[in-house]
Length: 81
Picture 1 (spheres, rainbow, N blue to C red):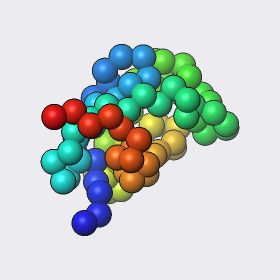
Picture 2: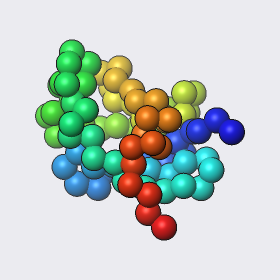
Picture 3: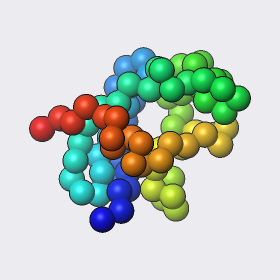
């Protein structure tokens, strides 16, 4: 089964709550991932919070073109029952 993000919400700081197509739900803190040309600007919390779930690629994206693979998000999130 391919993983797809179905829902995402900002929790606090750089933490996002996620729900996947397989029913898994969890939180991921992305504060250590905000490096480089694409992700560095997202250290501005106002920009970070403007993410959406792109319906075509079915993952979290930002308006500056940054996105994270659903597999990365799934493997690195803390699963919540």
